[in-house]
Length: 443
Image 1 (cartoon, one colour):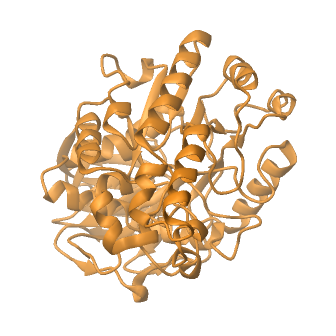
Image 2 (cartoon, helix red, strand yellow):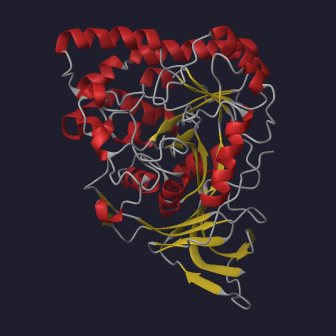
């Protein structure tokens, strides 16, 4: 099928150019001005809109298998394409954990039948599965995921002899959730003694503290340097951590990389008063100074990737008291809209958004032929209209959990079209239910 996109403002590789783009079958066939519509089954005139590569979200929790009352690969990938996310990497802390080859294959099988986006899955490391990691076909997975701090799913790995062996052996990046468990336990005990079972949510940033993040991140960076390994640190939440990373070489040459999530850029500890458990994440949302520091490190390229850590829980679960409220929140449907608001507020350029959400995940994980608008690359594309707006409410939220931390917020942009592998999967609120995404391949 031939689809012609006319008059697009294409954001790609540090530039914004006005051009037409021709999609044939599943790839980008031509990028130039005044492409003829002869032989095209569909022509879209997107004058006044932006055309981006499809977003690659390298950190999501779609909750399947085992936690499907919160979300499924079907429901959350539907929300993803509505938000312009055309590829995702899902995390291993499902039930059962993705720490065996068999469980990994089960996830691939589920996604092949149910995912609207392109997909892959990170393989989990724990204190006991080093031999299983050694059986992996590393071309099948983007990374090995280690939880150095506890979070949903109880996948804590704290044997640093095993962690060192995983770093030495892995042929793909080792990705970490970096918090020091002993510091968190000590802090939690202090706040339990002070407040009993009525700990205010504003204390979350002091329990999952800057010190807990910094100690863990310094330790794992030093270990990665010792073993000369590829390390990627997920969801930085502190200014001081972000300054540990380098910006003095191209991403393709970096051995140690990092990312920040939408919520740490969008919220700070002042928001706990209003949002309560609905902005409880691990690592925690911290101070305004930390938030500003993350923005600085993002723009000066110490931070390489923007992701969501999309992690749905039910409204009832998140409405519990602090000790009974799980950490995490849904984000994939609204990540591009949220970043566009930050652009309007002069925090980041459109070119930098595309670099961090499209190009850099593709470079960092060596994804084959995605993440850029280039001839013969897969036609994963998003049309963003900056001339429309909408307010986030229950009527337009696609997450299975039915809520968003952005509820009530007006976004001054709308994702109007999302192409996955050249297929128009999302158009003005309508999903092509017959389409399924593809397993991502790595170079």
